[in-house]
Length: 239
Length: 108
Image 1 (cartoon, rainbow over the protein chains, first blue to last red):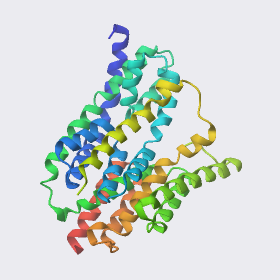
Image 2: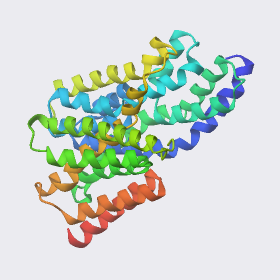
Image 3: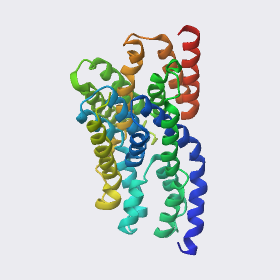
């Protein structure tokens, strides 16, 4: 790393450091839940290293436990990760001219926290070179991603020691609800979530968990339509 | 019990698919923007998919054999309310889990 990039890298490390507090309990919870589902430590760690996306990992694991068909497991978990494509599009004006190997690494490490830190900082530091922006990005992930792997292992190791009467069966629903609730910022988001809940309950009888696909698509359409209506009436505020 | 073959298909398939989603613009498409209607639907994927997974788990919990359980339902409502008003994920998990453990201790 050249001298001009070093401050950007360390600024990234400082900006990423607080996420340590968010990532640690999540990764441990994933390790615990994976153990409860019958995965061994290596399998849980592989999940976190290969996929490196919390909500999608929880989704896939829950649906595997429910014995859903592979197609439904993959489609649902990838749908949860569709936002990553938006992150990728949004960072391209800043990082699109970096060397290919760096862009590939950045893509692998593109998670909610690294995206949020990067986009806020890039908008502010407009005179940074591409190399400085890349250095910043790698700085941000340093306190986040290794912790994601390590704490998955810790969770998997302690998971088998947690007694069943602690209600661990309900850890996934609580985690998901806690993730969803702060996202309900606009009427369109709330309508999408409500439609999704009603469709999921109404179509729960459909075999192969396909009701989930119906509810997911239905929720997206309702959200998009409500947004259009709000825009037309001039009530839309960008979230 | 999760089938081992299926588990690895999911881990590898999800890994490849997630990387593709993250790489698609950064690596391949460049600065060409997505059409508005696509972006408008993408904005709602998370709030459309996650509630659909959670709702049946809350209304028909596996731990009670699918019978509605006031303790788990209350914990779900507490988590939702705390998360919605505080926007703090960890606080919502903490108070939701606290409500669940308290409920199970008192009525379980």
